[in-house]
Amino acid sequence: MGETVNTCHTGADLQPAFAVRRLSVSYGTLRPVDPQKCVLRDINLEIPAGSALGILGPNGAGKSTFLRALAGILPAEGEILLFGEPIARKKRREIAQYLALMSQFFPAGFSYTVRQTVEMGRYARGEGRERDREAVDESLEEAGLTDLANRPITQLSGGQLQRVFFARALAQETPILLLDEPTSSLDLKYQAEITGLLKRWKARQTTLPDGRTVPNTLISICHDLSLALDLSEDLVILKDGQMLAAGPVAQVLTRDLLQRVYGMDVPSYLLRRENFWRSMMDGSKS
Amino acid sequence: MRSERLKTNKRRAGRGAAAAGLAALLVFVLVLCVGVGSVAISPAQSLRIIWWKLTGMGSVSDLDPSLISILWDIRMPRVAMAFLAGGALSLSGAVMQTILQNPLASSYTLGVSSGASLGAAIVIVSGITLPVLGTLLLPAAAFGSGFLVIAVVLFISARISNSLQSHTVILMGMSVSLFVNALLTLVSSFAGAKSQQLLLWQMGSFSGMRWYHAGILLPICLVGLFLLIRHARELDILSFGDENALSLGVNVRQTKFLALALSSFLTGAAVCFTGTIGFVDLIAPHAVRRIFGAENGKVLPLSFLFGGAFLALCDMISRTLLAPRELPVGAVTAILGTPFFIWLYVRGGKHG
Image (cartoon, rainbow over all chains, first blue to last red; front, top):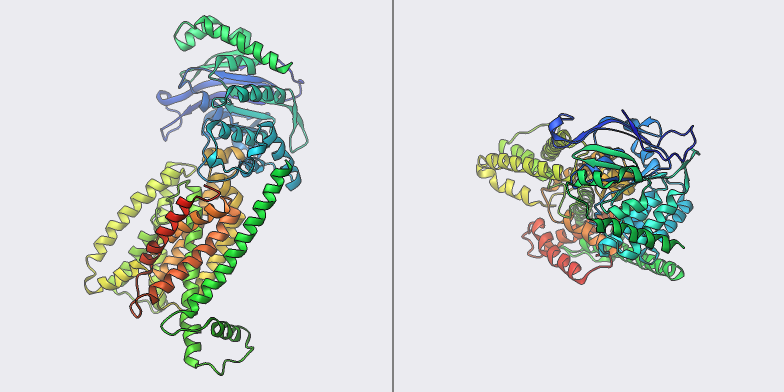
């Protein structure tokens, strides 16, 4: 029943980062789960710690809903286990020590500075002023924001703002990052930098406040096929709220499946572009 | 990196100077407000009388006793009430704008003032008296009905949206206050000879304020200020919306409930004595954010001080400009405040 996305980088004793069982989500109805109005229907999935999972699917497939359900901020039917424990029974502060969510929307209504905004990522963790400042400095630097630290966020461009929210997610120092199109507003340079940074981050481990050390897990929605290929080792394909396929990239991403998902013949230049992108990324690393 | 730190230090020094300036301005405004009126009392005289009243030291035997009485029994409680009410309204405005992520939101949006007006109208029109409460019946009724309206709004909103989403709360607040306003119109149509008194209450005024009024409002302000500042960080995060706040680990429902209840309580406590006074709750927090940035750890206390001083000043102008005639203080706040606010925006602060 449950599908396991697994390229297995983890010890056998470690619980999966997420175990999703019979997950359904519906909006706009007071009664939970009206099958007609389901945005997500009966999703079963296991995501081992240390995975790099990409979520693909056409517009309206339920990708963002799935990500927010994983973050535990949507009322959902079914069960989501976070490192083996039901997320629904955890306090918000504890969940925020495990996972950071970067959504697609970057509200900037009030004139907080970049640094103040990134500092908010430390709310759940709070390990003293000195450590917090260190973490914020690091995150600012990694997102290329050190020079903008004192700029009000109301004066930033869309791409700069996206990097602020990315830095805030990094400052949370969680072992799981949930990213909704992490590079959608970025120019070529930052796309490459953030993608490289995410790959390096994925290879590392994070120590939880309780002292356990777990491998980092990256789960990202990618609209861009090439980015999905570049960032992910495994893929989940959603369409109309249902999971069509899950597994290692090479197994899942076939021309046949793409045709089924997007309802069109995938033009071959997309695959060529992917090759180009990949070679460029490899080039930038060396 | 170093220049960055230098810049931060400079900025901090600038903010420190601005805060000191604000404190000096505050003292100046309060002394000015106590001194100016139909009988002028010099700042030196005011300070001597206050010092003597507070500590029993010094001598005031050379001063006219009526001067002392005017200052201590009439003007000071009035200025104190204007300051506290302005502070309470501004503090509550700052909180509402933050958690509802709406620059135009205030407790008034949620129907506190309509509710308070309805309670006051019922007492005024019906002529009910309660010996136990005496003159406090009117404020008690206003406060009670203002709070009842907010409770209804929050109850309905919580039923619709589990996390008290901003647009749900605002829409429910507006619909309920329209409903309450309709009831108010209905009650007013029976006012007859008492309609003048009703109108005066709705315009708001600080005349007739005594020390005991301030004695009731002061502890409410202090407790509200203390509790809200303790949650300043959560409020900062909530200004980015529910989803952001939840994913950063804030208990959104609890924090919102506490903040909405506290700021409604503050507004209710202020307007029940003075009648509805608008505008200061809207502009004071914006002005403070413009100068000092958005962090609520600073915005909340500074909005209190700034709003308080501003309303005390407006009240002084309202009672002196066409003396002995008194102008409605709500009109003065808007007439003075609007140009100031527009100037502040056009000039553009560092925290635009």
